[in-house]
Image (cartoon, rainbow, N blue to C red; front, side, top):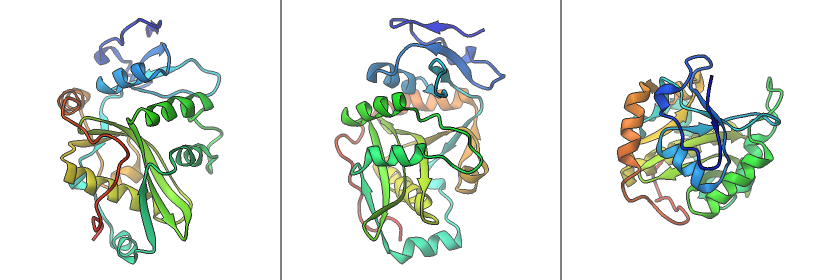
Length: 232
């Protein structure tokens, strides 16, 4: 049994999350900027389908990518050196979310509902949500978006229309965050794809301890701009 959140109900401790389904912590509440920021500060994120109540999760273990540990394969390194692409930040946030929400092979629907789009767009306007975009020949080819608090980045979703375009965006993100002194990129759920790029699982207790420290550092505010030459 999980608790129902009313507007003023705080999140329960993450240790109370269910083991099956892994990490389900609470339901209800809202997707206001304040509620979302409180969730991320405690290692919690929303994930639900259209027609369901808002569901809040904190899985154990937690998939994370430490920026210095990003893995770049030989073929990806070649793509990074090609320089046919341009990396932009925060120039097409809504487009990135819409692309992430588009139907994918083998998936019947998407958890990036219209309500989630509006909520994260508000986070973006408030300076907390960011997009990292790979542009090729003037077209949005791939990218990702997530939430930044202090020196922690909470990845939400990524997409690609051209081979390696989302990986290129992730490599640039990891290298820039390392340069800015960020401690981790939260990947939420474990996937073989993320593991191949260097992500690994850590205990939830370790994750929440790290996040509790990182979110208290001064972050990078305003529209993001990456340094040049980080993919070399």
